Length: 556
Image (cartoon, rainbow, N blue to C red; front, side):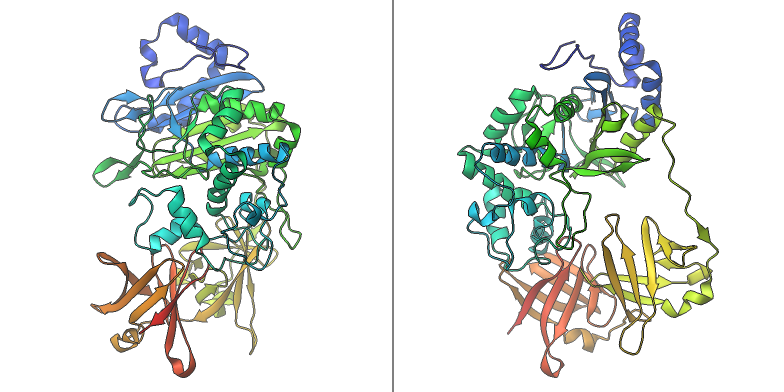
């Protein structure tokens, strides 16, 4: 055992449950006294799917106030080296790192060197002007409208992990974007771009590189002795757990081979995360810093969203939850604290892509507080299939232009494959989304309105009754070359075997699936073409949840 700074008592580094049989009885008794046998049993049950020596797994940490209740590991940190995950295993944060970047900016605010309402171009003059002032706060709340870099590099033909991207690469890419998703502040759209820029802001204002500033101002003062940024992904880090993704042939390594930090890229442990949460609760960095980090953002419409500064403020089973999820390559994480539950903190870090870290955190909360109110049962009624028959068809959302299909095949109403339930108030429920159908007129088409968890809404407009089945001649009118200066790419579009194929570079072909007239499904994004006078195709567009409309102009 060893005690880290600012801990009230030594922490026991618990081995995975699989290896518990080799522990001495005295150590087992000490662990039960520290964590409580019921919590250990609950964790063993929750993480049982990972409790083996032939796959990756998770580390979990639980604290209440300044008392650590549990730190435990399940599964393997390194399948090649036969090394198990233990409480001190270093794993990667994913986007949970955003709150640390926000804290770095807020320390500069506390120093009087930055203001959240400052124009971001004061510190980043190479950033284009987008017609509205983009503040530092907009960068940290996903309300800037900036496009996410992951989608942009994928459309260049080099998706994440196919190249070792650097901060310099991304600054050039982001500042080359002449348009953004929406007017600054009008909407919430998750984007890593703001936190990429925040890193450079910290470096320029502080005069230090981001890793040094974080170490001197955050990690060392708070006793986060196992925490550092992945500024060089090639660096050897003792105790680092490998990340994995399950394939048809078994587990394969899925590491984030890029030196991008700020939006993510934090190497740490569940113990350090618990320490971090304790300091947020105690406001060690200063009340102004911590209070600002949990102040929720308001859109220009006045709508308050859940996102604050690198943190989400919401509810779980009727109690306040302050947290964030993370996912990078094969890592999946969640860190949350519950001020109304005796300052409960729960940290989960997994090294398996797709592991439901948030669900595990909530399962721990459920085990500790089983009497919390359950969600109310939705008031649903029998669905009248005949009443919704006029709405069947293909709908295009008015933001990123994806196509959804509302159908009644087999007598079941589905929206893009998800069953639709009728609510007593005349609206509908599709998974976790509240949906309303709107009748059209001779000037207004039928539409579907989906409501987000923040109360914002997206309108989907009816486009066609059936899927478009273009002829080769129709596809041929779309073939050609399309230039995007924002990506510095000229796309080649051609017809091959009756399919439309888009190539950003030699050797990379994206085969498109027709949806409605002149529009296609490109897998993770929508692709559509627009026409000018005489019906001649003039441009190709890409749309996705994080890049709403990127235009490439047709060239000779």
